[in-house]
Each structure stands twice: as C-alpha cells, then as structure tokens.
Amino acid sequence: PMQTSYQVVKNAVHFKSPDRIPVQCSWYGISDTYGVDWGKPNTVIDDYNYTDFWGCGWRKVRKDNMGQIVKHPLADWDNLGEYQFPDPKQSEFYSMIESSLVGSENKYVVITIFLLIIDRLFGLRGFENTLTDLYLDRQKIENLADRIVDFHISTMNTIASMFPGRIHAMNFADDWGTERQAYVPVELWDEFFKPKYKKIFDSCKQNGWDIWMHSCGRINKIIPSLIDIGLDVINMSQPITNGIDEIGSQFAGKLCFQACCDIQKTLPFGSDQEIEQEAKDLILKWGTDKGGIIFSDYG
Image (cartoon, rainbow, N blue to C red; front, top):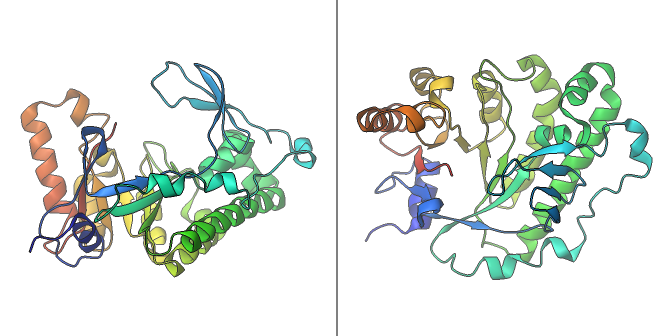
C-alpha cells in the first residue's frame, strides 16, 4: 500500500525511505503537512499597522504582506519594569487548536512558533540593541532570552499535553544570517544561543515532536551546531546563497531539507530550464536515496 502523507514526511525526515518526495505546497492546496493555528490574534490598528501578543508593533508597506517590526517595546531597558510578558497559562493561546486540527487526519501535523529566540529578541529590543547587548549588556539580554525560552517551552508542553499524539513537529522561524554569514561568530552562537535552542529542542523531543527551522541568509557555519542539538529539518530558501554543492557535500544525509529553488534569483529571474535544473540539483545533492528532501513552495 502507498504510504500516507504522514508516513511519507516522517520517513523523509528520518531517512526511512519514503515512497516519493513529500510535498509542502500549501499555497497551491497540495501538502503532505498540515499546519495548526495557536496563539492570540494580533491587535489590528489599521490596514497597515498591528501589534502582536508580545507587544511588538508591525507596519506593512502593502496590505498583502507581513510587514516588519517598527516598534520595539523594550528598546529602552527602563521599560522592562512595566513590560507585560505574555502569560503561557492564558487559555486564549490554545482555544483555536481543536478546530484547527479538523482535516489533519493522515497528515503530518506541524505547529509553528513564528519568531523563536533571535528574531523575538530583535522584535523586543531592536536589531542593533540586541547584537550590542551580547557584548555590552550580557546579563540583561541573557535574562530576556531565558524568559522567551521559558514561555515557548511552557506553551509547547501545554499543547502537547492537551493534544497528545496529534502533533508531530514544531516549526519555527529565526532568520540568522546576512548574504555573507551568520550575525554572530560561531563561538558566540555556541556559547550563548546553542544551550537555549537545545532547551527548547529537548522539550519538544520529549513530547515526540520533530524540529523544523526556517532561516534566511548564509547560515552554513552554524548548521553543525543545530544538527548537534537535534534539528531535524531546515528550510533555506536561498540555496544559491548557501551554495548547493557546498551544503550538499557537508550535510546531505545529516539533515532533512525543506527545499525550493532560490527565491531571490532562480524563481523570479530564471528560465524554465534553469528552474528545472536547480530543482533536480537540490533533489540529487541535498537529498539521499533514503530521504532527506521535502519539496516546498514559498508564498
């Protein structure tokens, strides 16, 4: 019998020979995975401005995009005293999950944390503040990061206990790099961030969940550390920036890739032939005979 969507994805992630390449093209209504909604809705101010449940203020340049954070509630450390951290015990965070699971039968179910650690720090403190804090105000940024980690662990454990066996992975987004390299040296990443990610990863693994990550940028140097602490799937949408041959030779068989052709170069500007060739390269160089590749879209 053919493998179910759940089995195809699970086998690809763990190199156990799926009978085809799993697909995650939800924008086209075709997907072996199933995303579950949780969390509090954004506070909408108008068509172009909203606030998320961490108090970060977002602005869109047009109605149909995500926008970016322009208001950082902890840009000034003096605001920490009156800042209200989200409460993981609030039932509102979990009220939409049951209805959101309808239709997930036989699918590989993924729950997403939009901004996990570094991007949430950027949202709360600001980009420059966060990176300078790592050198100039280590204790404060460490305490803030720990509060974020504790919140995520608490919410994910609550979800796992409320819906045992019905969710198969935690997916998160943390953009870690520029076009050239990660934002911080590997030594600092390993010292400061690695134990924090590991804490979240370990908690999810105890719940039986796989770990999926999205990151933009050339994050090649921190990938070994992510593998070391248990990352299962990585989504990098700029394979030319990362280097198709370079990534394949170093990490094929060690990590499953949720892959699409390069969103900055090949997809917008390549010919049909160039797109097809890059797709083949990704399958052959990033995947293996036993799995390790998931075909993905990107908006």
